[in-house]
Amino acid sequence: MTTLALHGVSMVFATKGQTATHALTDINLIIKKGELVSILGPSGCGKTTLLNILAGFSQVTSGTVTLGDRAIRGPGPDRGMVFQQGALFEWMSVRRNVDFGPRMRGTDRTTRDALTDRLLAQTGLSGFAEKPVYTLSGGMQQRVALARCLAGDPDVILMDEPLGALDALTREKMQGLILKLWKTTGKTVILMTHSVEEALLLGQRLIVMAPRPGRILREYHLPYAATGVDADLRTIKQKPDFIAHREEILSLIWGMEEEIMGQSEVPA
Image (cartoon, rainbow, N blue to C red):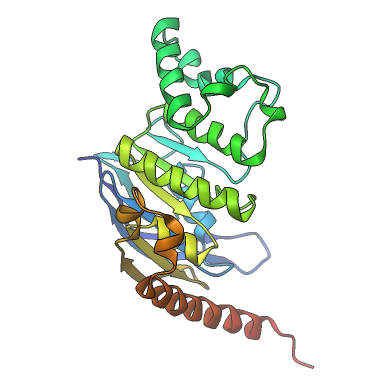
């Protein structure tokens, strides 16, 4: 079982001549293989810093980060990334974007084509294989980004606000797709989002972070991701327990945002 583990992780950004910024402090988190975890918090809580650490883009000031029996000290094929903007090769076709990783690894054409065809079917892109990416809508481009990430067969998929730029209807459709891909692939998925509703819907576990310095404030274990795979998402979002959770967490986040605003006020 490939477990992602953070023990005593802290991150301090120090610039000569300026006050050090404590971005994260004493983060302890165990994520088991196949879990879908959403991470939520107000501005400045360190979500992006944490994601960059998991991706290997940043090194911790103290503590350890491991995936299985290996320390994370840099980017690697065991972790795939899906960004808010797809970071795609827009001049290439959908197929060439999705099979880019396998091509770079020297995977033979027959194997590569079979993998790409399967992923295009899973993400609803079969009819768009030869279309240039720049001709697609934002939602379709994010489908390409998901398929390209899966083509690398990572153990962990890291998502940084992957649906943040989409309209409400497209966003809900993509939420359903993420749940289906999570269920069918068995991948570990970690999703950073500013949307309370999205974090509730997509997280088996929902981690609420607090800022200054960034730390884990609360953790929720939720049923909505599992039930949402085969259910109407609108129905789930209208359930009394879902609404109660949403209002509780909204109040929690709003309270922290107000505290941040109060701390940033300049005295007259």
